[in-house]
Length: 133
Image (cartoon, rainbow, N blue to C red; front, side, top):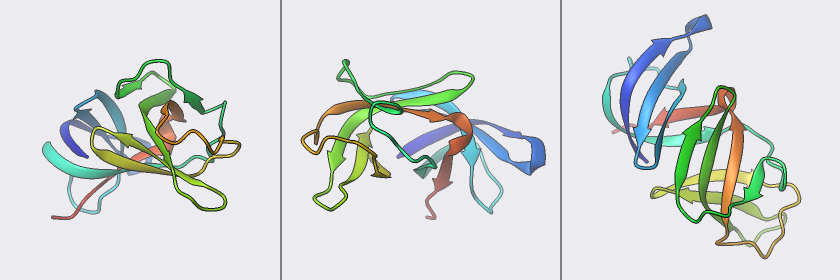
């Protein structure tokens, strides 16, 4: 996903937090890169370090629009769920042209592919990895 880094903060323990603007919302997340971070446009991949469970942190969304939002505790992602034909089924969410891997979602009904979902992830469990160019 193409994001615009609009702010950088070095937090406790030297963790770099990047304030990023995406086509569907803005959030502040951990920035994972050995190089010096910079403001501006970056192609990134999302990492959500969560064991997802259907009905708890993955929910069917009423609204059918892509969205990204943050409050003081968590980040919400809304996009389309896809399930791979595997056992157990592996899931990903499509959001603003990006594919965000979820891995196995505990308890997800197998007939939900292409369903709009909302993910709720603790802010500290979300990271961005810039793609090397």
